Amino acid sequence: MFTTNPRTISFSPSISKALKIPNPKTLPFQHTLLTRTRNQPASQLLTVPLIKSSLSTTEPTTTPTSTTSLTSQTPAHIRVDILSESLPFIQKFRGKTIVVKYGGAAMKSQTLQASVINDLVLLSCVGLRPVFVHGGGPEINSWLGKLGLQPNFLNGLRVTDSSTMEIVEMVLVGKVNKHLVSLINKAGATAVGLSGKDGRLLMARPNAKSAELGFVGDIARVDPSILRPLIANDHIPVIASVAADDDGQAYNINADTVAGELAAALGAEKLILLTDVAGILEDKENPKSLVKEIDIKGVRKMVEEGKIAGGMIPKVNCCVRSLAQGVKTASIIDGRKPHSLLLEILTDEGAGTMITG
Image (cartoon, rainbow, N blue to C red; front, side):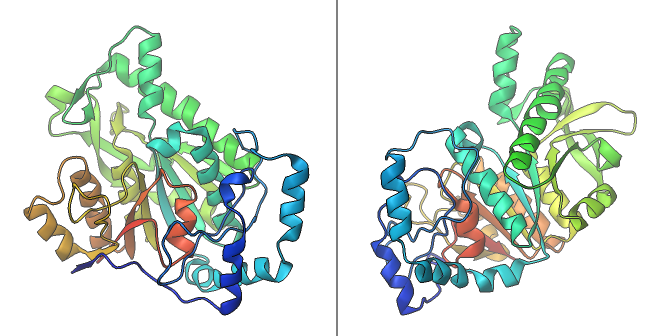
């Protein structure tokens, strides 16, 4: 079963007054809770500053004076009402583990990167237990180019010879991972950077097409023991998608796959994949045909009918596999949309497609 109807929630009359708040695009970067009533278009966004970002990479479009005046004009009771509307969602997810796979446009754009990092820290502050999994394709390609090596792909997977694997590990573990850890720490949380090698978190095996792909691996085993004390002590694990086999050979692992398997091993409440698409579409040619919620049976039917194809298939398979192993829900959300994490978790509207078991 699937539905294109939005997940909705009703709001108190006082909240509707907040729709008079000016367009958030005229404000400097800030945290927002984005919600909408049953009949309002998604473009009518409800905005309230939550935590001032220290990671903004863009200059404000208004002067400091006008910004201060605008904020002071927002009645305090409206800001409190907006926060109170998120209470049911915070209560639902408080103390629960969520696994977020980070990549795509949200990783390449500094503005979106700041949005994702701050949203992640906000969710941690209100009691959720996020685990952050990342790849880093564009950064790998950049460094390959600097070293005079040409990136090669086969059916969407990076062909990884020994030289490329060395660069993949250097970039993902040594550069991208530590950069994300620094951003999270700077935003006010405490992050710990790991790869699949650390504590035997992930054990790899060669991909079935290793003769063509080289050191591209699949996950043979997951041991989340190293993660549990970190999560229990409110640290945010940041995990690079590199692992090794029993002989110590490093492998490049698809980050979606890593996120799905970790979510299953941790008994996560939710798996979230940040992507460069709106989610699963009923009609691939119609971006307005977003399927807001669907179960595993509905997903399989759409694959059989050819409505889910190409690069969406491995993402959907990753979600289905995690659900089959006990994860409550899996969502494929639009990482190009600012604050899509907050939309997905703290509102009934969501920010993409939620798949249920």
